[in-house]
View 1 (cartoon, rainbow, N blue to C red):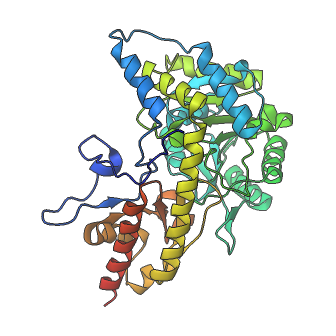
View 2 (view 1 turned 180 degrees about the vertical axis):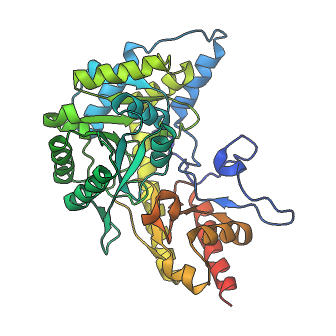
View 3 (view 1 turned 90 degrees about the vertical axis):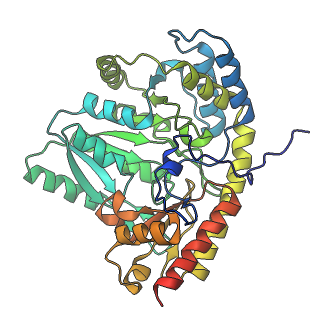
Length: 405
């Protein structure tokens, strides 16, 4: 019988260049800050993946290396087994990391000065990639229901496009997050069809960031935009092994694109950056993960879901003024701290999270990072050993208790 995975083990990442751990407040005589912010995991990657990297590193030549047929086969098998989606190798393009690939797609499928539609609050690099590539952000705010789930409405998107036209903007492109980061909504097929119907009517191409697609919890199931074949000329998927197998420092992603015109545009965008393949270690890590990582990921999701359940229960019971919700997907909790921020006399979520880091010694992501619709919220990363998570939550409780006295 295989040895069970020990997700309770706490590994020291300090001093390794890890953004999550090394970009924290340091104060002599104070406890180290517990980082519950950057969306990577504090778990070791699957043992077989680590061994594959060691084996390749043992060969002392690291020359130019293309993607093998085994890489494509492992990725196609993953989509078939995990999402019940049959793809062909020709439907896939290799890209750099997910965010750089978003930038490539923006440049390839829109023109400087164009508007790009996003549904907010949303993953903050969406804003960065749009603006840094000389495009204009067009926001369609989403609605939050009483159960912590976001939804987008056609009427709101139409209003956003109307406002863009008044600014003289053409809007040929939308960026979409599926599952939703930061809120954790897992979109139903009917919701995706509504989005793509809307896009098709207005000549908009939808770029779907599906990097969290493997983190979906029953009874929900994940539907990739690539599964909606009738809309192939309006949909491009960007994903990768980064979130699922904790490979954020290994930069490779993939596009799923089933329309030839879109494919040629993206190929031209990749060529313009002289990007041909991922590096040796990224490709080996992704291939190994997709080929043999399913059991590790299944065990990890059970562990993380319990983390989420315990964290939500603790916050709602022990930290007055915070309302936390269990996400349908991702390993991130989106919590409304508006009442607590007001009670403590703080200006906003940025001041709240800054004080919590300096004084409470735990770091969260302020909701304002995800756009104005995130103001008053915080995002909490639960993908860490449970003792570490519980200590971070205890510190939140203790800090707010000291502050309000």
